[in-house]
Image (cartoon, rainbow over all chains, first blue to last red; front, side, top):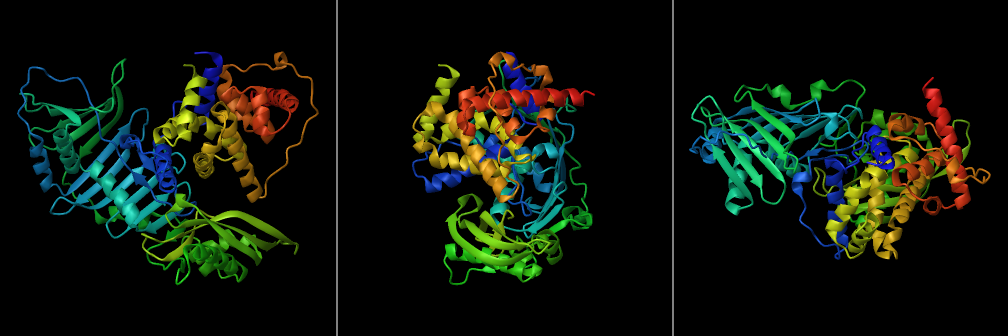
Length: 409
Length: 178
């Protein structure tokens, strides 16, 4: 490797970046960017997205954000006893999970010490009822570590580094969470595996050792990608004990992650499925569920509503109405709005608009130019322009037809 | 085909709206672009900025006449976006122009790969316009003329900036070493 290239790589590493390419979160964000762009640009052709590369995304706004996690359970191994005879069928494991109500999972990523942790509670039909996730910083370095609890009625999210606690619900997030849950719940994973096998997209090799103390191994090789997954299954219970994921390389398989499943049916306290009691004092609380956030669209067009959202927000700051400003500003509290926005000392709204579409934040999202008058502590007045405050409609969120500011100012 | 030829092919496919080509471009540039933007922006995040930059690339790549000019074009977009952000945040500082010096390339001492950790730390202490030229030089190994095209100044100014920037960097690294 020449010195320049090595210097380049080492500089990037020193900044916490991988010289070989973007991280999973960035890839996911980029895929969404492409999706958005393809809606407005019909010439952008769809190549099949490699969803297995999409690991994690969050970062929706500065003060309001939501995390989505897609855990890729995949890949292989080559070590098994060639003398053993196959006897096990995946359907046994799927059936075994029907009786599982509680489950804990730890996933260790290669080269990372801190595992991702999940706690899952299922109902009598085996459907996921409640879940809790701890995602360490390495999953998404931009956000820092995250704690998430989820039920069909409510999601809670705590960003430790950003000191922000978000309570929300949205169909979009629910869909993403359900997708993630399907990837982390063994029963659903095995059902998907059967479907993939029938579709011919994977090759499966099952080995059952004669020694009942040894686990059954199901080795799954993806036909489209250089990946293998090996599932270790307890012969007595037919439940998965661990999953190893490998990238197949010429020089040998490279371990990507190890997922351990344990404490089957050990009851998990309901308190684990809410993080409200664990939030430290002074955290910025964004409660989008119990508060009627934003302003109504009424008879306004989308563009008009976007402009009006920004106008009313700044007017609320002029009026020192921090409750209203906070409600428009993603739903932060009056106290927090005063603390964060009061120091701007906006004394007049000079101009707002026009609004231009900004699909990155949602189908009905706009970037709005505006100018306001600020008064400095010494009484000096000055004009401050904002190049593009983002406003978006609730759409599929818990408050449809209401508009909020998205991503700060 | 060499790297430049491959890049031109990818850019050409992007111009035709090939989604997989955009993904290849992203794979290739995201880490280094992020490093550059972080140095200019001075923040550890910069995700929002990068999203805006890529969005601009999608929208405007069809108008890029010369695929081989992509490198300079991309960094110009990034630079403009970062400095627009500076103006929004009211911390934009116009760049002072040093007197152009007749600095030859041979005067530009090289940094070894082993210096990377200390180099990275010291870069953070430099003035923005010094960070910028050095980052383009280290990360992209960009020729001086290309850096001038990105920054929008004369090649002589780039040479002098690199000269002063490296001098400052050396001092900073020596200071950090005690």
